[in-house]
Image 1 (cartoon, chains in turn blue, yellow):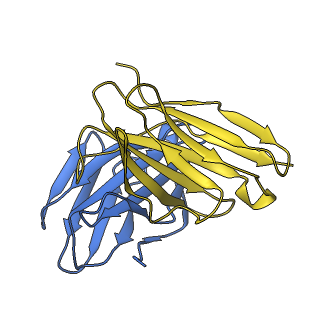
Image 2: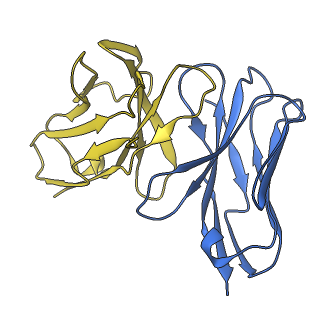
Length: 111
Length: 114
């Protein structure tokens, strides 16, 4: 059984704050690490697919880093806005076909 | 380009009935994945299919659950003789090819078993 952990489980920040959260995953048999943004009653939306150790990816105010040797990825949000409120999921892909998801970090940004 | 479509969005069944959940992948995608989210739990992989083939069903319960992805038409997840414990949100995702490419998710079907 693959263990993918995310922390914290939930996070409350003020508008304008920058924040980050962690995804840890097995460091063996790594193929890709996926980040998704999931708003209630909507489809999970793909943010990043990261494959190389040391990868850094950025989309607007959101960025992510990857360390495959130690088995962790960070997601950063700069200057959080209320519309960033969502659950952020990471998922580990070991070159099988399935994604193993973490429990998610639920972010709430207060105006 | 329409995204992944799932229907119905909500399905209510009584114990013992059958549930059929449909998933139409994005245009050009030949790989379909089904995931389930039980109450208070995360998304868990169920099955991976390509057209007319089940590639990996390691996450499927051994009984009552089956999946298909025919040459024509949507992928179907079928649950026979539903029980209350089958109540969950069922998500479908598709990708153009296997491996590390991102999987695009549908909006899910919420199954409630009375």
